[in-house]
Image (cartoon, rainbow, N blue to C red; front, side):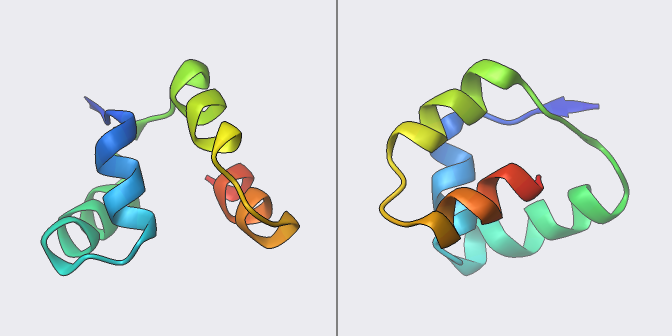
Amino acid sequence: MIVVDTSVWVEFLKGRPAYFLPMSALLEQQQVAAVECVFGELLQGVKSAREASIILGY
């Protein structure tokens, strides 16, 4: 199980290949632990309801 830092989530959500591909694989294998404080930080930076929905989906 891996705890992913906020900065890695940001790069993943931006779709940067260096982060998106490995993170996608880890998520599919259910190897990522969701930490509430990290998602709280991510939600502070949302610019739309769509972005919030995407983050809350994880």
